[in-house]
Image (cartoon, rainbow, N blue to C red; front, side, top):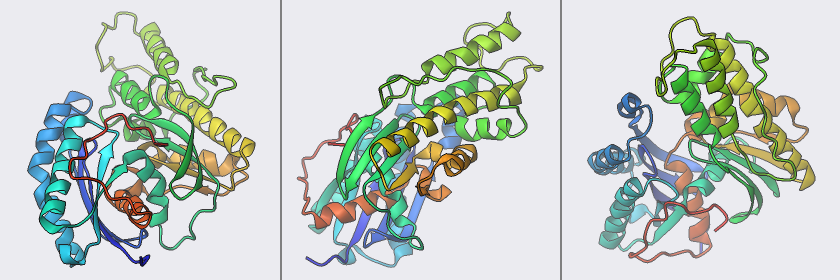
Amino acid sequence: MSDDTRILAIETSCDETAAAVVENGRRVLAGIVASQAAHHAKYGGVFPEAASRMHIESIYPVVAETLAQAHVGLEAVDAIAVTRGPGLAGSLVVGMAMAKGMALASGLPLIGVNHLEAHLYSIWLVEDEPEPAFPLLALIVSGGHSELVLMRDHLVYERLGGTLDDAAGEAFDKVARLLGLGYPGGPAIQAAAETGDPQAFKFPRAWLEDSWDFSFSGLKTAVLREVRSQQPDLEAGVEAPRPGLPIADLAASFQAAVIDVLVGKALSAAETLEAKEVLVAGGVSANRALRDAFRQRSTLPVRVPPLALCTDNAAMIGAVGHWRYLAGQRDALDMDVLPTWPVAA
């Protein structure tokens, strides 16, 4: 079997409808992402039923335009890769149905891909950099996941730890809502923190000694208590406190607490397990302060994807699809979605 491949990839795990054509696991011939973020902003987070309906409206035109931009037809594609999980069940089903229909009509192989695994492979899509060296320590930080994974080789993983309660991305969203900064919380907190003092408030760090797991629920609660101590008449459930709250300092102090734990645990794991490189991926990896902290504190090379590949996209699904196609993976057309699929499976 030749290593040359073209994979049509489809991603609908949450609130982005995306498709891409990826060549040889590294080159993106075309990639489109139709984001629903503006629609969900009024809810302060992703509204699952609305997300699945919007995927239904967007999936066909997104896939058709992607193939057009890549200047290829299905006859020039080797396989169809699709996100199988984890994610929102209703959203995953839309992408899976599209991929199954195309595979059935064309006779192309169907490959189910783990969304978290795909975030790891986003760095392989940076063509002007050499491929990462194994073993590498990967930190996946996104809206619903904070995971530490040791990647020993292609498709070979060991999950070291993960979220016990709120993931880092969830904590960003919830604190942003508390501070009246809107959704999505990551960019909003980052912008507010730029003029703030990261040492203004001594928020807790949950190190969870002798564990690679993460917990940010206590930090979120600490921010809530500080807000209520300054605005004691703030009603429960109110997400936009009165003017006068030190928003920048609160945002900067909260962000610093999250970053300290993410960077500290990841670099400690990398040293303990003798990793050759560190990979940081997922939506939260777009945070400038997080990137800077890793590069300042790490003695190992740190790889972070370009911003366009940090958030959900189909190109990373295609990158995994390439390696799984070469490994001989061929999934049945009755394959079901796996909303809680762990990365090491």
